[in-house]
Length: 318
Ligand SMILES: NC(=O)c1ccc[n+]([C@@H]2O[C@H](COP(=O)([O-])OP(=O)(O)OC[C@H]3O[C@@H](n4cnc5c(N)ncnc54)[C@H](O)[C@@H]3O)[C@@H](O)[C@H]2O)c1
Image (tube, rainbow, N blue to C red):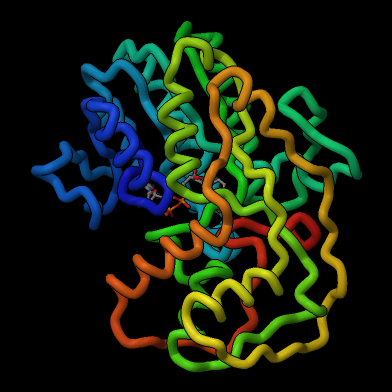
């Protein structure tokens, strides 16, 4: 399990442990949630090919989530991000071959659908050339996973994640930002009427989808793991005011309507994996707030309006 110390990865570790899967966590950082000793951990950088190879020894499957996943980080240092997201993935795939691993699951993103026009896109839809470098590296990883698994003779599964939220989320994402501000008694700033919407997927649902994708049926398949519930920024702010504190909403000018792009279908995952994102947004937000209050120190809200795209770029503004 690469990237097991991260936001999504730590929940995948939980989902796998709950299924009594023997997990080896591989990350360059020790996990705050699964310290070494309780969960077998290999601390290494994906770019260290020999160490990655050794980490896979004896594994049946590899769940590969480690990446430069924060778009700010990718923009600040595209070369280092490319090194991790594509060459690191190459190291994982070659190590899987050498270790005789049966399946590699690769974490991708629904941003690979980019600015597809209206309508519904699914896993058979055309995927164009990305505008954002982060998405380019993730799509390269998909292509490497698919082509090298064929060349080397093991199975692959590609999982295109929607925008995750929930406990352990990065602070810069929109829900953490709003919660922090409300907790500090500071107003929430909303640009352009707050009508932009996204389909956030609750992170524990996502982790359940990843665990299900280890099933035989998912061999050499691609799945969108997305929710079916649209949430606007304004609705999100209202949920936070209700759950945390009824702070003032300040409306500022901004783009009135974000480009929504096509709807990403999760029907294949429902049909083949029996998976749907079941947690309603309000309930997922409640669980995030509960975690936030239990784990955070005094509030430290900052003034900037949050971006709606979470860790990843919005479709309209890559
Ligand atoms: N968060 C999102 O919005 C989102 C959406 C879609 C897909 N994804 C994908 O899901 C995966 C997990 O994302 P996340 O949000 O949990 O990110 P995260 O940053 O919370 O976790 C990534 C983990 O990878 C580890 N890592 C990074 N570089 C490494 C390296 N060189 N060697 C070893 N470990 C390294 C980090 O230490 C971290 O624990 C990524 O592949 C990401 O591209 C994320």
